[in-house]
Length: 134
Image (cartoon, rainbow, N blue to C red; front, side, top):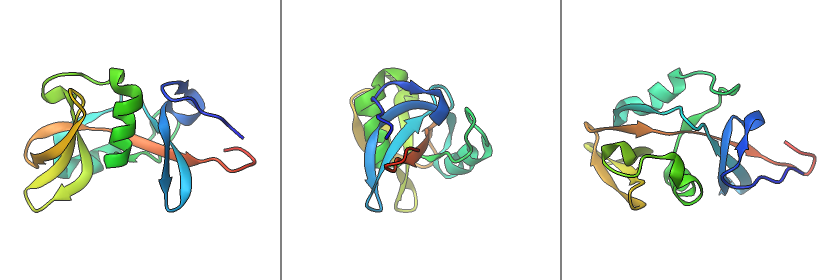
């Protein structure tokens, strides 16, 4: 079984390991690319991440959700800008028709932002490690 260490770079997985989380009852190990982020209004972020195609040898990247964002903040915060609007990433959940959830790396706060604001989108991928390996 593969053992991953948070904040370490795993080229075979496409980036930096940010930690484990449960998705549909299975432990997923989550990775972010170090430098691939897109900046746009909320409604354009997920399509922009999808249009990046292959990043570091993988094409199964998705937009970060709240749990992914918090893992990134806890385990890899130094990979992100720490002040101003550059330190904010969109999370994949809308909040009503004009707002959406965003995470600020300045203080780790999760709040809603106006969908017309331009923030970064963070690509994330995850793998399930079975007893036989990845």
